[in-house]
Length: 97
Image 1: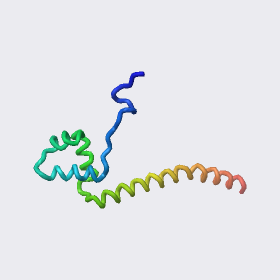
Image 2: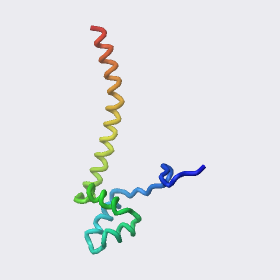
Image 3: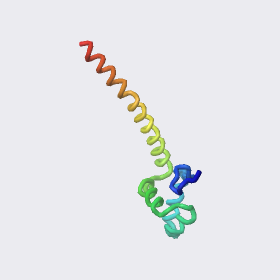
Image 4: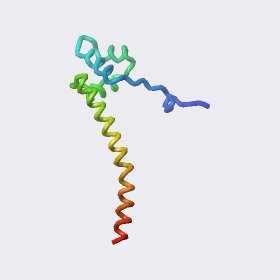
């Protein structure tokens, strides 16, 4: 079986939040963005995307942001599961009166 280069099975490298911040801090020195991207095997677009997200954040704030994002996704999941149940209960309750 053949897979295209855009296959979902293609391995993607994920950097930790701490690693991303370390990489971004390198750009504050004398190194160019091109050199940093080449060194860490990331694209310039990815570098700038991370800079927009984590640029002014220190390490502690970044960890807190990651925790809040996880909590937010869990709460969205819970809400998505409970809304249909709530609608069914409202419909049943409306028929009784």
